[in-house]
Amino acid sequence: MVLTVDRQKRLCDQWGADLHTEHEKYLVKHCGDIPVFVINYPLALKPFYMRDNEDSPQHTVAAVDLLVPGVGELFGGSLREERYHFLEQRLARSGLTEAYQWYLDLRRFGSVPHGGFGMGFERYLQCILGIDNIKDVIPFPRFTHSCLL
Image (cartoon, rainbow, N blue to C red; front, side, top):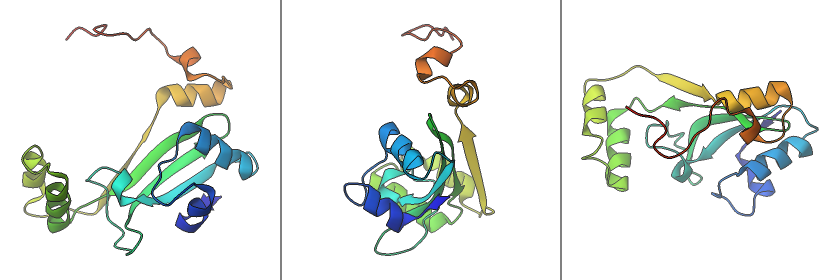
């Protein structure tokens, strides 16, 4: 099942509110405990490099999350903004132009349309093992300064 902007809008308190784990689990349960794709997130919630859908007045990005029973979000992905002037404008609006000048330099002479996705390893383990709490599938203890570089 795929939830679009309008369906997501009715299930959230207000347009533009982010989905938390409990919201994601509710959506999966509401749709019959099957995997659910949520698409077209609000532009303000996502990073600058996600491709703008140019769908005024909603201003969404070409992003997708796969929600699964018992876990919530398992995969997240998006198309990447390849249009230089859009990247430049979004970074300027966010006040990040100086910090991400290197990113703009990589795309100054053009880029190809492309995308990417990621999967949380612990969430994957949680899904296939049927474990309720993500803390129970973390393969090694994590605490401050535990990783020496």
